[in-house]
Amino acid sequence: MILLFLSDVDSAADWQAELGKLLPELELRVWPDIGDPTEIDAALVWRPPPGLLDQLPNLKLIISLGAGVDHILADPSLPPGIPILRLVDPYMTVAMSEYVQLQVLRLHRQDLIYRAQQQARVWRPLPQPNAAERRVGMLGLGVLGGAAALCLKVLGFNVAGWCRTERKLPGIPAFHGADGLAALLERSEILVCLLPLTPATAGILDARLFAGLPRGAAIVNCARGAHLVEADLLAALDNGQISAAVLDVFGDEPLPQQHPFWRHPRILITPHVAAATHPPTAAAAVADNLRRLRQGRPFLNRVDVSMRY
Ligand code: NAP
Ligand code: GLV
Image (cartoon, rainbow, N blue to C red; front, top):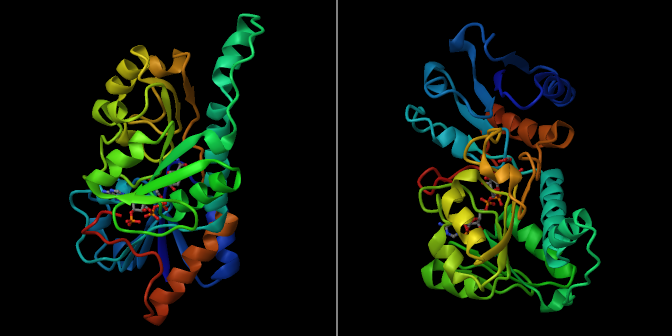
């Protein structure tokens, strides 16, 4: 079996080493040295250039190098009917839960204000609510959002979530649909976004959504940059509707040097690292699906293309 590997952020050498241990017979062709395109059976990709996958006439499977598949579905000439799989890796799930807990705790304990006070040599203790009194909302209760919500619950936060369909998570009220969103927002002093990027969720973090939150709420976006309407966030920070934002993802990555987010005192930036893909663990999931391809068995974590996630 021949697998095309294409990514500008993942190491081909690491993937070659990890997949080689699990599937010694697999041949990896690293873009752009793909040889004869008719020989490629499957593609393991991050942000493939539009049109590329359509040039592989015998392609049978597309696997995302990340949990999200928006970077694949954005290709207008994606060959139809080929299964698209997303990455689900317990290591990634734990990493995302770590990130969410870190940032929610940082906001809950007003760390941005204490850092600013330190810069100004100000000694001013602030009111300190308990985690049980802090209402946290999670947009998206899938593999990553669901796990992170449960971790926040274990830390003692008053957590609720929102998803598309009706779902049950132990001890976590789950809202769904448009009415459900309003109800979640109203009770979210800290709102975390872990939605997939789809036509239904693009731009969801906008002025309208911010207005539905309690005044002074904070947001964490660790899903996709295009969930956020950047100008609306800057306006909401200016007028005090939003008190702080932690952003891991951006419409334009790397975030351009002149972007106003860099120097904003109430925006905390990380460079799309909330949950990196980790070849030593992720390779097992990829190898499993490649074996399924060879044996004609059903795939795991197949994307519903009609739902875009
Ligand atoms: P997932 O398992 O597919 O879960 C998606 C969740 O979003 C589900 O609960 C789903 O609802 C909900 N949802 C989808 N469309 C919705 C809509 N229109 N309205 C309300 N809820 C909706 O995805 P995941 O594995 O948790 O990953 C989420 C996203 O995290 C990825 O797509 C990716 O963009 C991002 N991510 C970021 C990083 C990083 O480092 N920053 C790393 C990994 C992933 P249902 O439960 O009802 O289906
Ligand atoms: C990273 O952003 C991912 O989708 O895994």
